[in-house]
Amino acid sequence: MSATVVDSDGRVSAVASAANPVVIGGVHFRLLGSGGDSAAAAMAVEEDRLPLVKAIDGAALLVVVAGLGGGTGSGALPAVLRLAASRSVPTLVFTVAPFRIEGVERLKSAAAAVRALEGLGTVRVRLSNDDLVADAPECATLPEAMARADSVAVAALSLIWSLCARPAYLRLDPATLLETLSRGRGDAHFAFARAEGADRAAVVAHRLLEGPGPALRVHADDIRGALVGVTGGTDLRLAEVGAAAGAVSGILPTGTPVRLSVALDAVREGALEVAVLAFRDWAESSATGDEGAGSTSIHAPDRFAGVAATPIGGENLDDPTWLRRNLRLAL
Image 1 (spheres, rainbow, N blue to C red):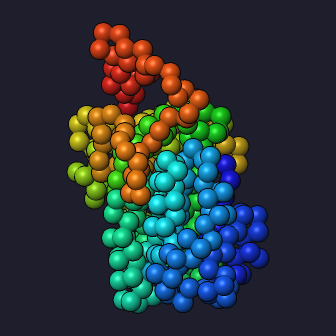
Image 2: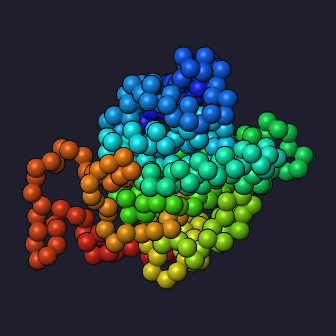
Image 3: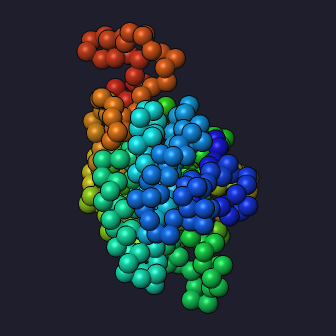
């Protein structure tokens, strides 16, 4: 897993040196930022595409977090997603809208940027800075509030990492994760909660469903499938996993598929963290089709290219039994 930070502001090289910084539009913008010009930012991606292509090529999944409302994120994001689609790399996209206090102009710019993403990206999640800091106390300083917003964004990325990489008792392998994202393609909701103490499972369940911050209950009727990641230390109890997963499945329409992964992480000892990716659409089978600028099809690794399927009795035996028989974990 590797990270790349893309910006039109030359200062990104100093603050994100550990994350493969890529400065776009260096000649046009003179390393000073896009000045809110999203069209120029999109052109800058094309001009400086080589380091971006290098970061994308060979990736099994590209997770993108973009701040909207200015020029760089709003303009560069669609161009980056088209690059990924042209290389058949699936994308999980998190967009973050500005604070309301930043003004109507930036909010309108962010809304226009979201509309420009129609048909791009495999799965798209819309967040806002206001939601991300909703549970910060009124006395919180600006650095504390921004740290809270960052922690939720990090949780989104950690969900993907922990699902596949952490020691786990209920683990999704990378192929199953990609297949899940393919089924849930399109717009999705995200919720995250963390708690400590004896009643941490109840607190997490309440925050996931009711907030503050991004909450699931208000979207429950629109959810057609969900991916639930539970992370804790070695003190994580089975009953807590059941309570968190049951809270999510309990508000969803009957029969909604819920895929669960439970990972252990020593740095989370004493804490319970749950992240939920809830899909507004859920295909009966993973998506396939022709590729193009707006295509978000997910393809299996080419190591099996040219290998014929194994159809027996109308079923492809190369698919896992739980997938062919539509089996789900009872929560």
